[in-house]
Structures are given as structure tokens and as C-alpha cells.
Length: 246
Image 1 (cartoon, one colour):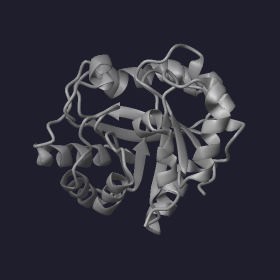
Image 2: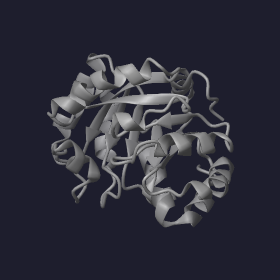
Image 3: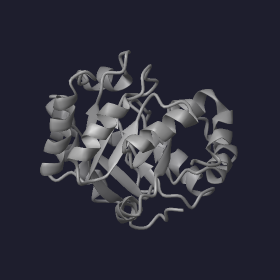
Image 4: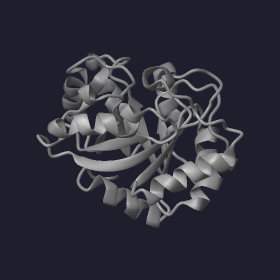
């Protein structure tokens, strides 16, 4: 189990010993707080190593309330995956400080980050700089609508690789390849493997993974940490498939 303290260093340690990590993503906009205890008990009984909290559009203070409730029921690290600065809460353990490298909207490359500093300075959150790359997945995602940016074509693998490597050279600690919430197509093994081979930092993969087979394929291709959200929202029994991964 990954402990809350030093979230990033624990990720690095896990990667160094080839331990695969899994984050369950909870979108405060789609989750009822009163269901927290039952849901998190299933998370604790699964192979999950992290709880990510965030969404593209979330009302003020909802994230704060949800994170406080989640923390009552798990020792897993709770990591913010924010779509906006309104989702920042000091009650979490860490935050992915996301820069949308696949888009060219300055607000999501640096603008929102500047606005966030006054809030972050009032917390003890571990801040993990993360290069976020949205890949075309067969449907328009909430990320596209909110950021007003286009994803990178999944056919342009070299551009995806170059974008990820540029993020690493800019000093990002993590690269997050995302097909988007509710993606019709998960990222291919070719994309994941090609990006992983070009990096020397951990690789997160999310979007469109709805089965144990797809999860194992993502790991085999090189994903260090996989994020799953929609599968749990639509099929609560999916937890039963994650009792053991070969």
C-alpha cells in the first residue's frame, strides 16, 4: 500500500521495483457523498493504490466536502486531479499541478497555475508538476469543452512522443496520457509503449479502460499508474475484477 506521505517519492519507488499502480478517480460532480463509506470500502479491498479526486466542472466547496469524507475511510493517498482552481482543498494529500501540453490555451498552460498560487500557499499539499496530454478518443470530451482545445490525433504517435518528451525536458515530474472521461477508445499499446520508451519519468495513463484485460494491456505496454473512473461509475462490480492482477 502506498502511504500518504511523500506521494511522488512513493511513486518513484514503486516504478523502480516495477510495481504497477492504480488510481480510482472520483468525480465530485457525479458522486454522492453519502455513498462514500461503501464505495471506499470496495476501493480498500481492491488493488487500488491511490484515490484521485477531480472533474472538469465541479461546484465550489463540493471537492472539499468529499475529500474530507473520503479521508475518514482510507489510508490511501488522496490526490487532487483538478479541472479548475475551485477544486483545490488542503484536506487532500497531494495535487497534480496539471499543464495541458496538448493544447495551446494559455490559461491551461500557465494562467490557471498563477491564479492557484494564493490558494496553494495556504495549504500543505504536495505539489506534483504534471504534463497533461489529451489524445483523441472517438468523442468530444469534457476537457475539450472546458479548455477549448483539441486533442492530439491518436494516429500522430510521433507528435504525442515529442509532446511528452518536451514536458519532461521542461521539468515535469509526471506525464499523464489521457483519452478523456467516458472515452470510446482507450489508448493503444503502441502509444503507451512509444511514450514510455522516450521518458525517464513515470507515465500515467487514463481514459476508456473498462476491463481487467484493458488494464493489464496498459501495464504491459508501459503504464506506471493507470487511472480508472467511468468503469466504476457504470459498473460497481468492476471492483470484483480487480482483486488480483497477474
